[in-house]
Amino acid sequence: MQWKALALALFAEYVSGQTVPPIGQYPMLRFECSQLVVDRIDPLVNPGSIPSPHLHQIVGGNSFNATLSHDLPSASTCTSCTFSEDFSNYWTAVLYFRARNGTFKRVPQFVSEGLTGNGGITVYYIPSSNKTQSVTAFKPGFRMLVGDSTATSAPEPRKVCHRCMPKTGDNSNINCGDPDTQTLPKGFCEGGIRTIITFPTCWDGVNLDSPDHKSHLAYAQGSKANDVGPTGSCPASHPVVVPQVMYEVMWDTRIFNDKNLWPKDGAQPFVWSFGDQTGYGNHGDYVFGWKDDSLQRAMDARCNGDTCTALKYQAPEEAMKCTVPRVVDEDVDGWLTTLPGDHMPY
View (cartoon, rainbow, N blue to C red):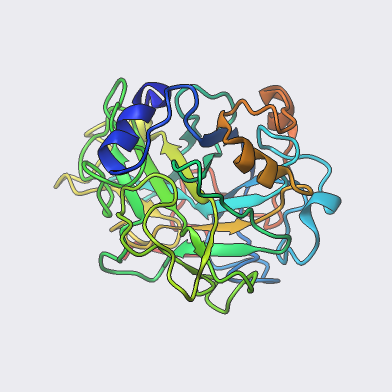
């Protein structure tokens, strides 16, 4: 995705009635977070459980553990993200390939266009395109979840999606819209599979979390699934505008583009680590961990890309050094007879 070239077109197409900033001043903090660990723990949905039911891929601060009840910036000594003040943790489920013989192989990630790193997630924090509308950075202890691993039909709103990427270049939208689908792609994808996970932009202003990790947030009224940045109007119950957080994960399914590996009937062979073959259950978790007021500074400065004078930058080589050992001792990378946690596709 040639993201700098498409920034102007994105807002012109999807954010009607707003002033579009010139190229180079587009307010979109976009940066790489390399792989911290691939592990079967989930401090948001299954706090304290070792192991948790299914496997995740995690990026961010190295104080990640099964509870995340501590202050992330003070407990972390490094981060796998581009900006050294960001000790947040970001995680998603893991994609597997199921071969014709019934065995499973983890699909590796690759880094999105224009960035350098080791697998992981490309993270976006997007303020409003309207310079007169400020956004409020998250507070210490804040956490949220998008998606539902138990979903068996298309959820609304459409904020989690997949795209079958072309072999070279993709100049269309970065958020969920055509040709994205809520289901996993059904054929060979010459450029791999991209997943997008977009979080709400309206907060109740009080609660750092909620029992379902969702109810303290809301999607804006009048916003569309493919809107980039906060748009629409926040409801009275959730009046505080927060940055739009978005995950972009590139899955290197290209290494499995061999018809001799796929099922004989050509059926879609990819499955999420909790067993979902449809794609409807894809989800993402977030726990805030920026140091002091660094995220607010970046949003106020309306930074663009992975260059932001309001933040401290670290070289990709340093970010890639930040890893932690896997807590759950199990094979996640070999050819497996079941998914980690003994899941089977459904």
